[in-house]
Image: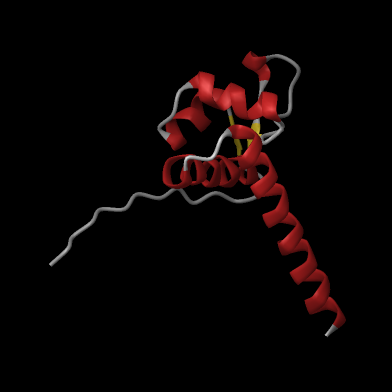
Length: 100
């Protein structure tokens, strides 16, 4: 039998994470998250890194970015494009459901 232990984090839309919290939730380094911000993949609230606050949506995007980079070896520009396209697909699906 293949036993895997999965860990999860249940967040609501009002949850905010600091830079350190996001890094811990993603098991990643500060530098990697900062690169995601510089590429425009994540958009934190706050002017300075010490003030950054990330939404639950940012955590979802960071996990998706990790999977794209790990599984498909996509660079950060490619990750940004892929996530934008996935967001567009979700938006179009939502609009289609409203029209039905």
